[in-house]
Image 1 (cartoon, one colour):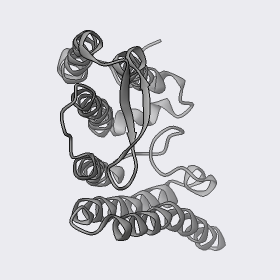
Image 2: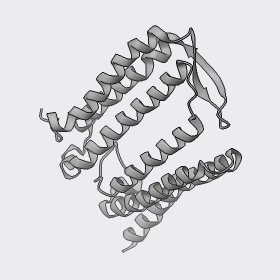
Image 3: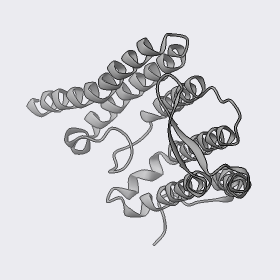
Length: 220
């Protein structure tokens, strides 16, 4: 059975190169990590959790490989697989973006594990902001499917609701990403309050919007 999105050398060279780089780095990190490696930081940038050397070295690259393989498998599994041909470029952007994001986070943790000072409270929110901005710019290009985009009972049931909801969601994602980047210049307590409020808005507003839009269209 052929895939609605056929992998090619051009489409896969970036994620595969990143995976190979991370896997190669994992053996270096394992050789030089201490027995306990920082693995989590609180909102003030203080280390509040550690993991073993082996877990810190190999977990993220392994997880990244699994995520990549899932991206390859999803078009086969989706009942709406034929729609994937309509957003092939966006699908590859999402796949490459997530793999790159995971790889960069892994190297941040790796460098911190080697004992270097890493400004986690600046770098991670900035990366998350960029992630949301890029996703937001491509969200409106995603067509109806069961795995990607803003999926509610009402968007799945109606293409117009899907398109308008994901267009709105894309704008909210871009705004959220921009606020994440700008928020790094605020005191941490204020930043995290804004983060929680914006997260609630990004999650709840598209759901409510899709419901009322579906009702409006159905009443016609």
